[in-house]
Image (cartoon, rainbow, N blue to C red):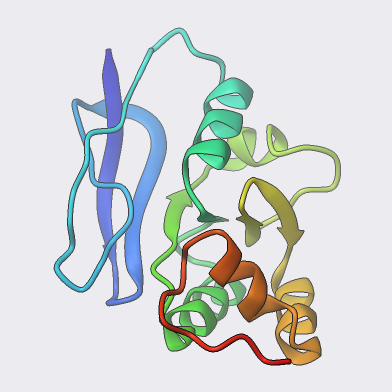
Length: 145
């Protein structure tokens, strides 16, 4: 068994590299940066690993560290008070996300949201915050009527 590599992604979340490199890592970040073990089976295919991670985390972003759009997505969610799990992917792993997937790619409650433009569209339409509250990513936040 090997794990994910932990990498700090500003104050908005903890980044995880999906490659099998270390024994354990942190999942999502709270203001206290709580940690939990995430171990993976070395033989687990990237696609199965990605699907499992999507189902285990209420808000997850698949990212590249050098992607400015990824940075903006993380900042938007951080501004709202959400601390997403951030997974840094390489090219092969991005293809495992599905047809036409690119970075950033967000999932809320296990459902694909899409890229930055889709996330902004949800936010501007007033549907993003209720989605985040419904999956437990935002607490004590009034849902706009």
